[in-house]
Length: 372
Ligand SMILES: Nc1ncnc2c1ncn2[C@@H]1O[C@H](COP(=O)(O)OP(=O)(O)O)[C@@H](O)[C@H]1O
Ligand SMILES: [Mg+2]
Image (cartoon, rainbow, N blue to C red; front, side, top):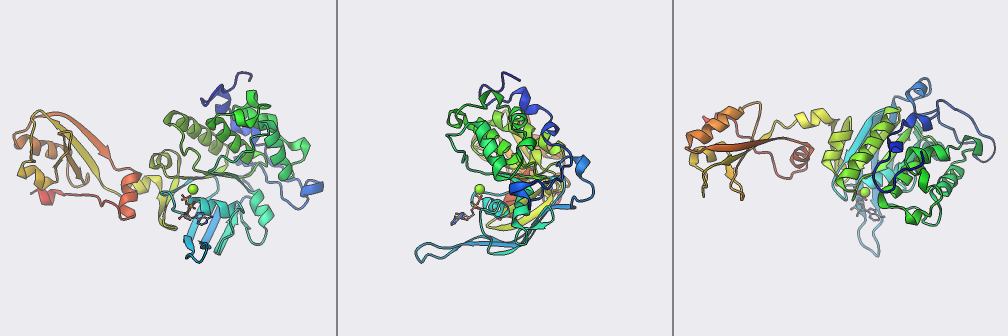
């Protein structure tokens, strides 16, 4: 494709079938520099047979204490994390800044040395066989750390060389096409936009065809539109059978992309469940009522139900949807002599769950009993 991605917008190439760059099973022990490194069978489902482990990632009791500088106390970034990511799933590690997400990723990538615990990547223990463990994942780092003096093509060739991918097996052009950078193949990387650099990082993580792809905050600082396009890319990757672990502090992102989500806070996993279960865990809905009248205080009967007045003049209430029904709340508003002009409801999302689990604002859940 010749007119790929003039800017951050996604070109047709982005949406192209990623299977094209994930060739099926090649378990070659290439001669020369990489003789001891296993070349992984393609990440595609077709190759998922025999050798593929049930768990793509298995982490037990993982701890990391960063040494303190100049006599300062050390920083406990991970306090005994257990995590299991199944083969083929899209798993989200969700947590606020400083929760320990990058530390965990960087330990898997071999960039940070853990203080304690075990990790197996594609069944390979990172202590016993670090080279092969690392060969099983492609990590897209949070920082945009691309050497600005190489072109995208050179960047991928260098990366392939680092992983010992023989020249005949390299798919540089294909990968560039897939991430929509064909037009920029020979441009200086420093001339690429932020979105293009991010896509180049994804390309870089894919050159050795790893069965697991790890994306550390893939859309941090990216505008909403580009974020959605990057989501499409990630989904397309997952559809080829690649196991995806992504970290994010965007609740919306975890909800939109992930089969399962682990919530991490202060270096500890506080919840781990399917996205659906996590959302269902909080039986909470919110109602916003625009009324025709302008009032200064909430009538007592409504205050008892948990209604509060918002600065914009609307009435707000959070309620347990299993125990109280919307008509009842609206009926109460009318019974208080007010006229409903408009309503808006909001389901609980991961943000609410996160707040409830991490000791932020607790959910307000008035029930019909209270309302009696
Ligand atoms: N190299 C380092 N040296 C000391 N402390 C660090 C280092 N890297 C991260 N930290 C600290 O460890 C904690 C976890 O950081 P990080 O893993 O980057 O979190 P996240 O990626 O979730 O934002 C933070 O308190 C951070 O300040
Ligand atoms: Mg981080």
